[in-house]
Length: 101
Figure 1 (cartoon, helix red, strand yellow):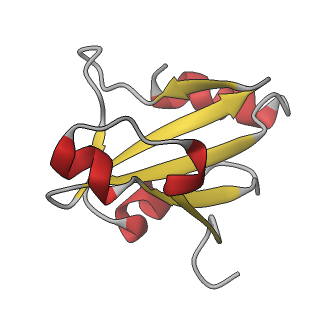
Figure 2: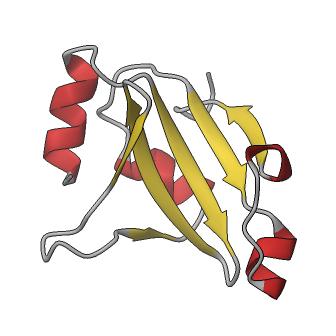
């Protein structure tokens, strides 16, 4: 899903939440959650859209309506050992979508 599609779904009230997923190496990926399914943000070439930081995500999402927005840190064990992580191992922290709110 590209940014324009994600924004259109958000404006239509179809996005339940946005998750910014923090990966090793300072890479962040954005996904929209709709009806229990994850829809990652893609760039113009259909590749995963990489963000640099929470502030970079806020800049990209500045035109979005106010939505639940979470920072997700994946399990270190999953990244280091290749073990599958359960939902309890990921850290999910609510953050504000727009800075200053």
